[in-house]
Image (tube, rainbow, N blue to C red):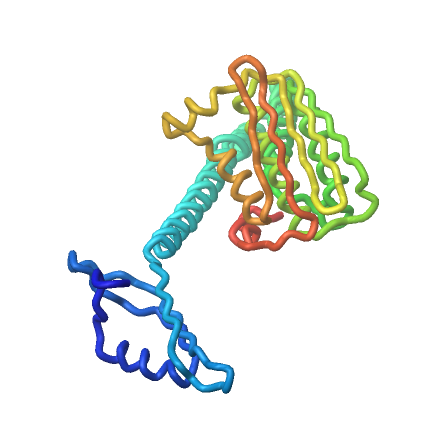
Length: 308
């Protein structure tokens, strides 16, 4: 470190002397001429002659400021990711709660009121009784449809029993019955089931993207393709909807809760997430996840509030 640094503590000098008898690797703190404390990794190695006698030391100091700065940045990114995950969870909970309250809850309340009106009706008015019966029937049909709509946002039993491919097929079939957008799904080389956690993640990504397409894309067609290769699984989602300007979306601070949720699921399994979209030209999402990738963060553990 030359004349620019001086050892801050006496025991650091003592340890340098003790390095004659052992190799020392230690993080030490120094003060430069500006009075700044600098963290450095000091490596001391004994030099020996041909007779094996100690003759001196090689002392190397590594400035750790850049390393510590990177570590702080990574820690900030980790915390920011956790914040994004929490926001996505809260948004999802709020959406489901709103759907239940404004949709299914109100339909069931209406059925209850109509049933009370029916029971209080005089038997001498058969035409009005028939009218109320038809009304109840229509309301029940609406409640059933709404419950199916809500179920699209939950993990189905078919995923556990028959696997991801069957579950996504079922998801697409139900969506085609309920929405104007036409969905298609194709799976390639899935001769056997994959890891259960990975199945859940891929299913939830399809589920979330379908919600986005239905609510925002105004697409006539949407296609899901999933390929199982030797080391990776590739999921491609494309639609012919209105698209959007990705740069403008991020610039305005609107990343899209759905996109955040999907991306975080992928990153948690060491995967890659890319999106290509332009106004008027639809959207394409390409996801690659290692078949045996390390699950660096147990995302599913933090998503179990939506399990069915």
